[in-house]
Length: 374
Ligand SMILES: Cc1cc2nc3c(=O)[nH]c(=O)nc-3n(C[C@H](O)[C@H](O)[C@H](O)COP(=O)(O)OP(=O)(O)OC[C@H]3O[C@@H](n4cnc5c(N)ncnc54)[C@H](O)[C@@H]3O)c2cc1C
Image (tube, rainbow, N blue to C red; front, side):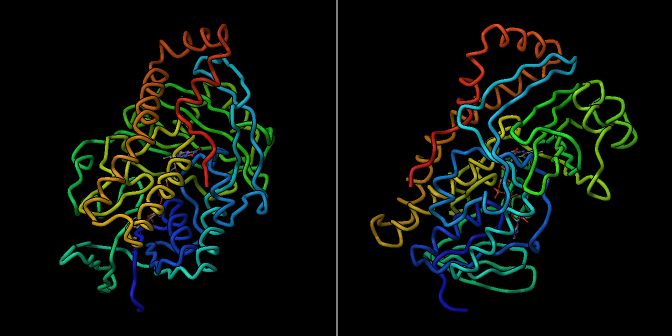
């Protein structure tokens, strides 16, 4: 293996975009991802347009692969009250199966070395990082970028604080074929959770919901839960009942945590969900993942070019910039999700927003950023 400047752990959106950015600037990057591409992931698959200028700079245009333009937003409550609005910036619909795969192809084109393996340990000695993998590889690099997602074996290894707290959320996703507007992303609430709906590149509708385990455990399986809880919302019932599943069974993940994390852990620069996760209700986790990788890549390049003199300085600068970019969004996202989780309050909020509809784009803006500068 040639000498490596940066090892990126995790090849989701954060890992792939930072690997591409770094390699474009001549940095020697090794990206380690535990799964093969392409692969479906539990995700709402609505991406805010704020990332488009940066994706284009990296050489990726989602519309070349059939992504759908999305400009409208609909919100319904568990008792069938609804509101619609134009999205301030808009976004696009693209499956993670396709988007991660295409970015992976681009990373390869940019000479990123990609290894399919699971990182099991990261240590640092004499200013050099050393990583160990499941298949007994031992690799050294000047820096390690942690982009290993919302919950990983490495979070347990480093005893990150959020791992000690119970995370009651689980997520379910399925692609279906059926009738749904291409321009719309809908957020349909039900008691104990909410379901995002939008179209992706191949015309399928992505249905992805998140619920808390308390609400779910009273029912014996996903089908009964959907029938008894989700379908009280008529908009959900309509699409679920009149569409055909494209997966044999839905994908499900559990223990989703929204606890605060640190943007630098064990001297690793953390990106995407590894650094902090916004409620999916805000539809901007992917935007945050991509923006944080730009932030990290720019500072890492400055460090490798010795514009930033020490690793300590790099860690400090990244922490400050990360907090400035994301702390407010995260807080706003948590508050909005908390308010809409209150079954008694959500319908009242919706009536209020119908009266003061000009507030809807303002609320959306609180959890999103301006188009990224390149
Ligand atoms: C139910 C739900 C709905 C959502 N809907 C939306 C939405 O509509 N819009 C939006 O913008 N965001 C949404 N999000 C958030 C979005 O999915 C995440 O913010 C985004 O995937 C973060 O990207 P990432 O690269 O940080 O992590 P990931 O995409 O999870 O990538 C992490 C990668 O690291 C790999 N990995 C982990 N550990 C190791 C290891 N030890 N060694 C090697 N590889 C490893 C994993 O295999 C994985 O591929 C949603 C999230 C959930 C849970």
